[in-house]
Each structure stands twice: as C-alpha cells, then as structure tokens.
Length: 116
Image (tube, rainbow, N blue to C red; front, side, top):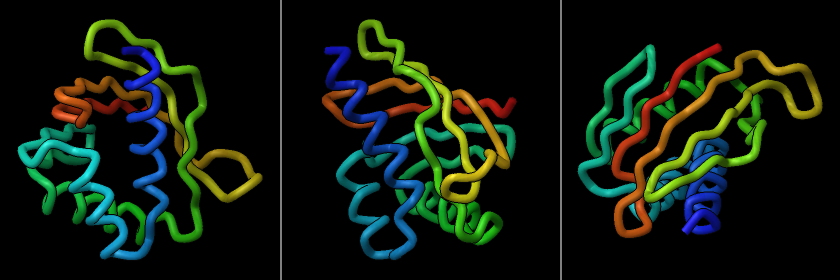
C-alpha cells in the first residue's frame, strides 16, 4: 500500500506543475475523488473545479516556479505525509510545506497542507 500512496503523492506534485488548463484538469479528475477536500492556510477547496482554480491561481502568483517533493513519503493505512517545496528550477525554494493526504480507492479524498 505504501508504494501506491507514494505514487499518488508524486502524481499530486506533478499536477501542480501542469500549466496547460486542459491537461491539469484531466490530471485532477484522474487523481482526485470528485468530492476532494483540500485545505491549506490559504483556501478550503472542495471538488475538482475549486481545486483546479486554486492551483491555477497559485501558478499565476509564482510564475516559472516548480513544485517538487522534498522528503520521503511516510505512510500507514491509507494515509501519507510528505514535505514539498516550490521555487525556480535549480534555485532556492520560495516556500516549503508539508501535507497530509488521505487516499480512497487509489484517489486523493482529503489533503491538508501546512506552510513552514
């Protein structure tokens, strides 16, 4: 199960780097449950459309930045936690955070993010 959650987390990080709206939305619909609940200090987004809008807005605020996994993924049961960072490719991170993820049937059902 842990390798499945690690794969989901890696796809989740990749989703934040998809700037093409159609490609990003398709990835969201494949990876997230339709009723996904996403919460971080800036937003409480529920559902595909709200999450897609939030990712697009974040990308506008951080043009040219790349999201990447910054830690191993720690897992148990259907849960995972990990650290991520965002910044210019090859440069120092502009932001670092850590997320907790709940996976149901191979899809992200809930995600709670914290910023460092």
